[in-house]
Image (cartoon, rainbow, N blue to C red; front, side, top):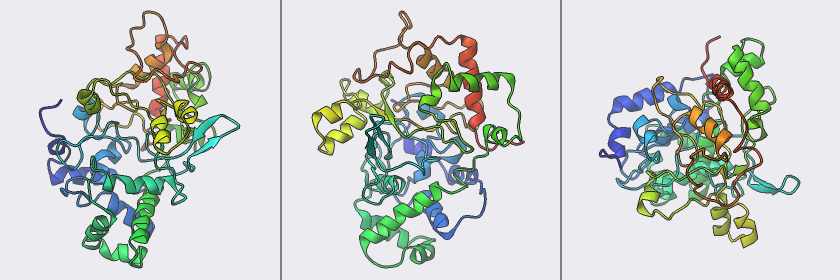
Amino acid sequence: MRSKSIPALARASAAVLLLVIAGACTSGTLTPKEKLGKALFFDQNLSLKSNQSCATCHAPDVGWTGPHADINTHGTVYEGSIPGAFGDRKPPAAAYGGNCPILHYDTKEGVWVGGMFWDGRATGSALGDPLAEQAQGPFLNPKEQALSNPEAVISIVKASTYAGLFAEQCPGSDTTDLYNCIGRAIAAYERSSEVNPFTSKYDYWLKGKAKLAAEEHLGLALFNGKAKCSECHLSKGDKPLFTDFTYDNLGIPKNPENPATIANPNWADPGLGGFLRSAGRDKRVYMAEWGKHKVPTLRNVDKRPSEGFVKAYGHNGYFKSLLEIVHFYNTRDLPGAGWPAPEVADNVNTDEMGDLGLSPREEAAIVAFMKTLTDGWQP
């Protein structure tokens, strides 16, 4: 494990927070509800030790995910408000998830679709909105912001500098209604044009306002064809989200520096299957989903503050570069490829990955294309 505590790294000074907030460049005027959501999203006081906000693990300058290269290089799990409290997964992107449906089983396709978090446990069934339900979760999670109950969250908000905006947008006194309004406000901000600007080179290319380089064109063709990436990371339409909101077991190896693995070397992340089991589903249902995790968006998958900044990929952050994970997709099942065993051996996807026959040049081209998905491109 790292010698420094993660809160010290993540929240070393007020200057760091200002840089994070500055990274959320306004892409148009926010509505009052979105403004409230933004204030909530960046408020470190909404945690037990007043040291962690949503943005601590979902920062704009890295594509709304984990903003610390040293953490990403190792276990990739960010420490909660309480020192020594860790979850067991890397932070997913907080952007481009607003169209996610309520978790349901698609009988035609034979797959689960929707819900938020890597395991889909924010189903959306309570509020009719998975994104709003997800926003409520970290405040009360003892391994994240660690507040004791919704009343504690509401009390801090009422004492904040944006209390007037909260009172305006969330009238009334019922605790449930107020807490639901907080979740919906954060979801509104996460759906805003500030978080989802669609300003990548690929977006401009779709509008006929940019030209892809030859390598990027090759990568796009491979992405939609031989490499089978678009089977799950949908690329069609004028504003593609590069996810189908389904779940998959990619056969990713264990991350040996994951705090959960360090605590228990036999632990393995059950993903969606684990949630379905906890929700009381039949064994035949949950075991068919054991080890599967939500397909993430690829938008801003390479967004980083500097060229040498390390981002992590996969639900447990095992991979440390785009080229590494593409090579894994391509070669996982080849004899002598040398990849460790899957974290969960059940339900590994062998139809769309594992032996794709891509050359090194083709792998590099796919990476080049994915880099065109970074917002903030200047035409």
